Amino acid sequence: MLAATWTTGAALGITIATIAWRLRALSGAGAVAAALLGTVAVAAGWSWAIVLLAYFVSSSALSRYRLAEKERRLDDLLDKGGRRDAAQVLANGAVFGVAAAAFAAAPSPTWQALGAGALAASAADTWATEIGTLARGAPRSIVTGRRVPVGTSGGITILGLVASVGGAAFVAGLALALGWPQGAAAGALSGGIAGSIGDSLLGATVQCRRHCPQCDVPTERRVHGCGTGTVITGGIRWLDNDGVNALSTATGALTAWLVSYAA
Ligand SMILES: [Zn+2]
Image (cartoon, rainbow, N blue to C red; front, side, top):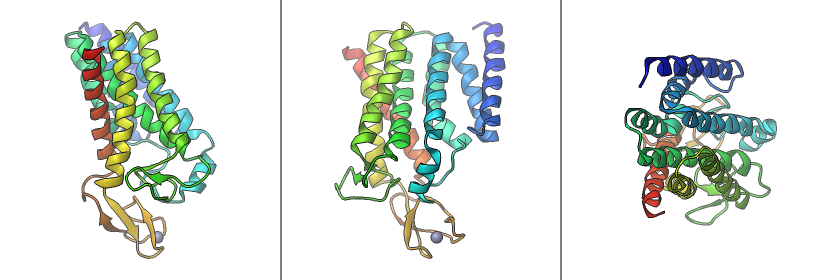
């Protein structure tokens, strides 16, 4: 690939990541990770950069949509605030980045299917979380069907499920509009939905669960908002929300790849 393309990619990646950092959508380290991702995407081609940017802008906008209401509903259950850090950026973007780098080196529809599937899974999960949190009524565990507190990993709502299909369809439709193979678009739609369901299943079963002994409430934080250290009550110690996100984007990519072959 031409050096000029990489230079243009780096310039654009750094510019957009800096704007996102100034707008408080990304932390400092998150902006560095996003700039790297943007550079690789531009090197793979403009369609890769457009699909990544559309994902990022839509996710950031949805995060801000009725933010105060969501923060009230989530209380301090969740691990992280609105700014995406490096671990979150990489959990959602690493598989897409590897596919983009591979496509830049040796273009093939396989990389497009893997990249679109990974990004569709991230979009499906983000849309489901950001819109589903606003659903009336408590979510239910995808595994037990019992009601769980708003924001609990593995908790699902009808509104969240509809939003996840919307997120997957958004990436799939965009890929199609940008001239990517139909197989990659069909793969993105199914991979996005499979990744999002996988995210909920893993979140309900193996993701590390914590509890604040002081407030007697579940949380994802190591140190609760009240300042008390939390205790692990279940799941795999090292598997946090970012780890589950990384696994679900990989699930989305693999599903998309298989479907692109069948389509
Ligand atoms: Zn507490």
